Length: 452
Image (cartoon, rainbow, N blue to C red; front, top):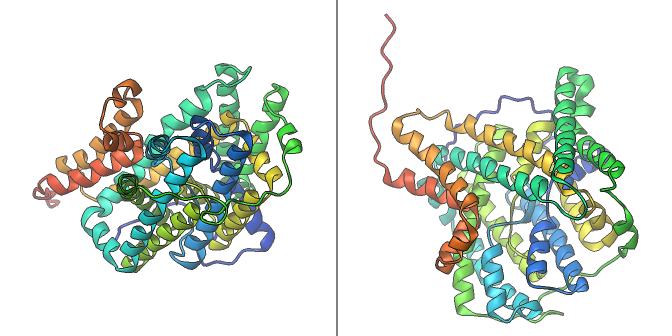
């Protein structure tokens, strides 16, 4: 499928370009640091009231699953510079299934039993070549670009609300805003400085995310908001739980059907990420690559389920890092996958990332969201901005914000499947883009008068 994507920035290294091992490791670490891998399992573990050991095991399983899925997708199947991590889309469905099975680890066993069949169906969509046909019909460049914009815009309130405006412990909103502003300013400042310096500033551009996070942590330490005590207290090595081996799995038809629907939404979410990466690296995705992407997505989700974790998806924030650093080499993404696996096995390393204050991550993440949205704008502007296309682009953004801001007590009154869908503003906006493009009639493209 032809996709008119144009990247107007400067790539330092393309997907197939080699990188020295040290630089690849450093860049891979930046990708991992910009992710919030631990948030999804932390939310689920907290709501299900897991014990401390069960919560720790669940969070580390998410890191391990993300690393394996990243290696599967970026190195062996789709071969696109993407990083996989836990999707926010299934949280509502996972909690509903777990509570329906009695909660606790018993509920987790029912969740795993629902995830495995759905992952196999996703693999089947890719292997049979059905997936690219669905994308060609339902996700043309106009819709793909709109989904990219929706991803960036929908994540902005999340970055601000959950990471900046939410107060934990003895902190204040003012302190949170200051920490977020410091990390965001360091990110933008180092990136612009690196670009201004040309080739001499490449190292600064490549280090921008780490510099922003370290600088934010230093300021947080002066505020008494950052400590490495959790790293000192964490264990060195932790073995993962494996389904069917040392963790019981139960199956429920209704839970399986629910998760199949959720997987389709996750695929819509991750397709937007693929288009975002394609736009940044200026390399349209082929039909075969899209099918391989679905296959890799399914295999990654299957590996995640077998490791007693939740579905994975391509993380769009990493597309923003590619745009900022200019490095799209898959070697860096192999390093990111390996580091995620390491963090999933070594408790102290994962604790080090988890110790970064949320406002610091929020400041970096907010900038990346803006970069993602602008990459989507680059894609959609290749289509004529007719009244019909303005609706296809604009209304999904509105509906994504609706899903973000709708009162939770109203959402609780809706049917289960609707609640699961509205729970993901990205998926909700993405589906509106797909539906609007299918149902709104195509008008004649206005012709500009010839110059006289």
